Length: 133
Image (cartoon, rainbow, N blue to C red; front, side, top):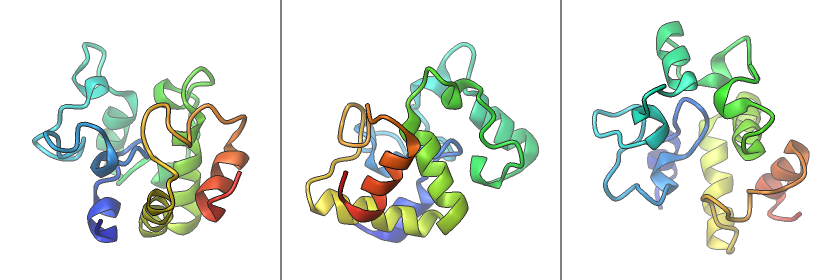
């Protein structure tokens, strides 16, 4: 898997479109071939709309991160918030490197995979950066 390709596929919210289960038919939220359910829903994606309105690359470039809205609400998946923190601190390429390295070592990205259902952002970041819980 190409680090540059994965890095460029990171959505506004921090999800990694190239590693999504829909990647074979979707090029991610920043493309014209976007099939993200959140983006296409009636209410749309808050993070997508906000980043486009602010003309920024992603939530990691926003002064208001974390905004606690939509994908970053307390009831949503904390891994996304942790991924954006990682990008804010180390950049999209580094996040892509971590994810690919971990994928090669059996730590899988995706819904209900290894980064999901962890207790807090710090645990997600530790797993991401070290490959260990």
